[in-house]
Length: 411
Image (cartoon, rainbow, N blue to C red; front, side):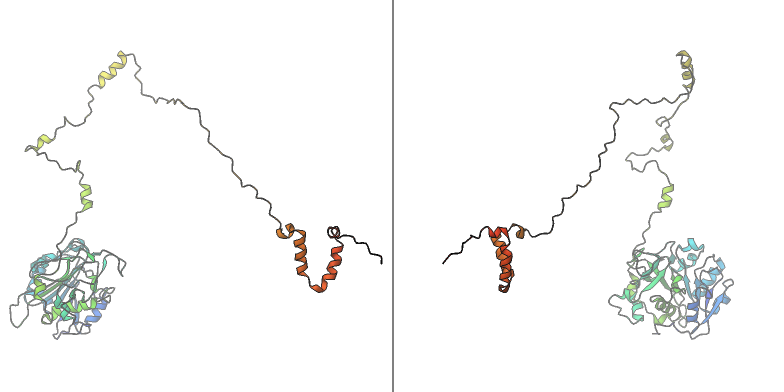
């Protein structure tokens, strides 16, 4: 098995030729520069800017058609068919919108080998890692366990997630035998589980030369400078080059070839086109339509306006002695059943002034009895100062009133 990180090597002197004759979207000197640098290490790389002829394809080991924007001629298709029948290898990429967007006819060639690129776009159903919905990160998109075996991964359990790749601005692919899908959109993108990369191997006409190979991938951005280093897109490039150059080294699983895990293509109604097709009634009816459809155009039952009585109406003005003048706007006269109301306005309610703040004083000290205050005062002084306190007490009239006067006795 060749190394996974680098592309497969080529022993012959033939070149990988990139076609530039159909106004391709991707060019090796513009947005495929990184791919060009990788390939020219082990391969000879060339560009074709003229009409596709057998002389051009004789020098090609792989003929790459990177998202053409012009149509091919019938002679060019016949040349490519002859190149594939002779054991050649072709890689075709496109983008979102398919043939309709790129204005090409590449499907005319691909349908001969069971492949068709759809006129749709692949989007991711929820955001993860890449901001644009069409920059789809597909982590479980491998359809054939032979790819996992080639990469040295476990091919029995969860081979669909053996590598992840970014699939930006791409379309889905329809496949039919002998084409084999190897990559899909996975369960996290829309459309769900639809092929995006398919391979076709033609029957060999000679034992010495392998049959022709064609690989189709619905997005040319996968190998562009912006995305080729993202995720495992380099691994995808290695798988495709191995199939095109050394097909014997990539052995696909026969069970997955016969029954790939892909979903049916679901067609969504074009609401924009349907909105332009106006219908008077969308309800279904159980009445059977008559065989003579002209009888359906019955104008008698429809609403209509007749001017046959206008002349009689004008004559009636004179007969009724009513002036024939234009109608004037009658001034309305409104009767008031109730008196005029006045708006109910209530005066503002201001907050009342609060009560005055109490002074800070000791209530117990103010309301104690005289005996209690004396006891409290006595406890505060020392025994040494009692004499001075007694002198002060004698001066108080409240105390002297209760001291009896004793006259001195005469001995």
